[in-house]
View: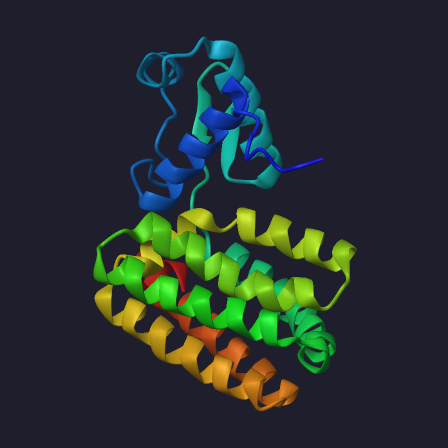
Length: 222
């Protein structure tokens, strides 16, 4: 059978979910802000049913919280929670990188490099949503190369829970510049086959993100 290029269009729920994720990542919906369902349903041109279904998914990921008699709110940022999530990521992702680096193919390295390039291009064009997506592809190229789908699934849940944090981090130009430099260093380490150096570089990369967000939120949250 030939590939006709046909792709199933997204359902209303999938389309709404993608738009809600974009709004959170871009900072259009900020931590603590109420999700006004009527306004969003009108904006997206859908009923409240697919909107509620999408919000249930985001609630399960920890990106929104439901308050009885009030509705949904974007999850508030808490640095202690962020540090816990990133600690869990460190444990899982470090193991994935150690397994993945010796297994990487030339195609994997090409995808890793292309993702780093896409991060840079998105930043240059001011598209922080695209930058976030390219950054995710960069990291998951390594994680998924380990061939451990259960581990990758757990890491994906942790990533989903911190999208609002990521929007704060990328808001600062200095942080975006650090991302470029740190990604390039990781690519060099991976290309050299040095898994332990890649683990150290990625750990530093995560630590920089956590501390940058802590500074944004202020001393009371640190």
